[in-house]
Amino acid sequence: MVNIGIKNLTEKFFHCNKLKIIVYLCNLYQIKINKMKRKIFFPIVVVVITLFACNDQTKSAWTSFRGNEQNTGYTNSTVSQELVNLKWRFKAENWIFSSPVVFNNLVFSGSFDGCLYALDINTGEEKWKFQTGDWIVSSPAVSLGLVLFGSRDTYFHALDINTGEEKWKFKTQDWVDSSPVVSSGLVFFGSDDGCLYALDINTGEEKWKFKTEDKIFSSPAVSSGLVFFGGDDGYFYALDVNTGEEKWKFQTEDEIFSSPAVASGLVLFGSDDGYFYALDVNTGEEKWKFQTEGEIGSSPAVSDGLVFFGNNDGYLYAL
Image 1: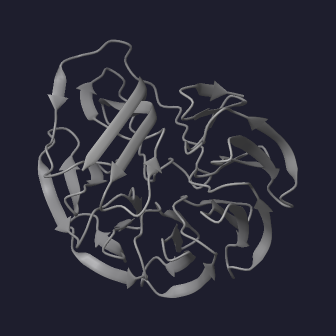
Image 2: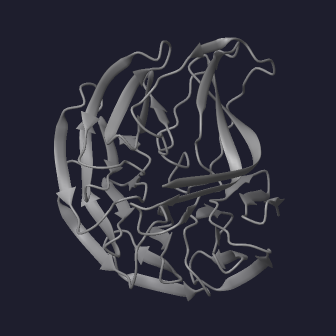
């Protein structure tokens, strides 16, 4: 049984290697699936990826879920203002929930069919695919010649970017829906087993893990020697990137699905308690919060002094 509700469909534009990528977003994307252990709200979810030729010659890469270690979701790339004909589209065997990343003329994305796909950016031709044992909800990251992502087969996978050959995999105790971030030779991600993991990117060796009291769906951000993430236990955490030592934590009144962004000395995120929070990156002190009328599962984007996020009350906010 699948129920999908979509409200206030919007479009976001990215540019990469002479292509304009239109990512269709929705202010509320509600999925209820019997197989899932929870109801998921994703205000920022890739629903359809459509690519169009554009005139700008600038090349750029988008190598992780939110584009950088700080998860700001911002690019200064430019795109054409006019829509051109459909360039290509690629059909997977099931839903594509994973957000795409772009690197070296390839587009990478996972699917509920359990495959991670690598496609030619100009033609959409499948260059390779890798089959996991379950759905891929996690969005991949690309670093040091590897494509890194989690799967509901409980493994975190690292593949060769050119061939799709598996270089290593790491076993967790539950689903890995959290999207990874890479910093200083380590890859960070959360799991439904309640742990935030830090692995050596070259070997997959566990450097440390930090145990929370519930699932971790939020995708981490890294800044100022700290890794930030929220948990289903309602806490927002800041850990030392090298040791996993807890530096501070902040309690909200409900689960945190939102992935944080870091900008201007603040870490920014939403909670299912209806508040959008801004905390001091070093101390966790609340600098301000903004109340909405619904749950905030949306991950914020930051640009030109403004922070943008969606909400299941049907509004897109700019603060």
